[in-house]
Amino acid sequence: MDLDNNNNPLTPEHVAIIMDGNGRWAKKRLLGTSRGHRAGADALRNVLRAARSRGVRCLTVYAFSSENWRRPEEEVGALMSLLKSYLGREVDELNDEQVKITFIGRRDRLSSDLVRLIESAEAKTSNNTAFELNLAVDYGGHWDIANAAKALAKRVAAGQLDWQDINEDEAHGNDNESQDDRDEFLPLDQPGTDGAKRCSIQHKDERETGDK
Image (cartoon, rainbow, N blue to C red; front, side, top):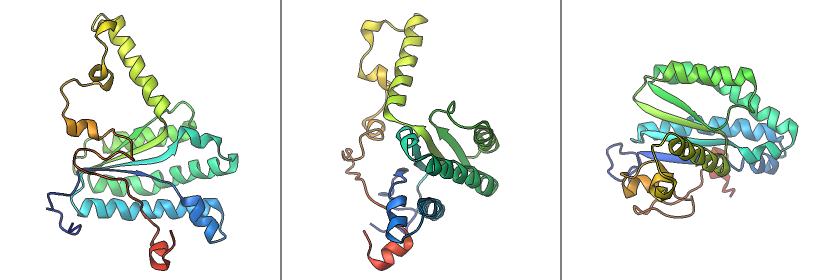
């Protein structure tokens, strides 16, 4: 595949990335975990630019899962500070480049100042159409299932849906969606109908030294 050709028909419109391995990267270099997370944020900036230049229209980044709250308090604090720093540093530039920013996940466990930054970023970029950046924060499978269940319960309570009619299509939210739409939500280790696969993105110096 010629990744430098932004007209390549094989270029996916939507790419999802799990930001994992930053701690291991730092440990190999005898650095603190927070240093690894900062390096990951720098790598994300490069990935975003590369994705846009090659024709990708949407990038979803799983930055902080609900399970990450179990990490040491100091590390969680560093991650939240990094997210606030990222928003303060990048939003204006992304807005100038017509990037729409959307956050996925719970907000009730985030600090009020971080929520304000999130809401400000979404409001400022809401009308942008050149590229979509989804940031998943405090997001997990249980949260997703709970929200789907709440949405179905609301429809049943409003008389819009009979509980006996609930099926996979209703639970998915759209009974007219295509197979391609369904593939977007497949587990990362399960290839979709188009053969898409999970891959790993390394830090620049890992590629240069051959680290895995």
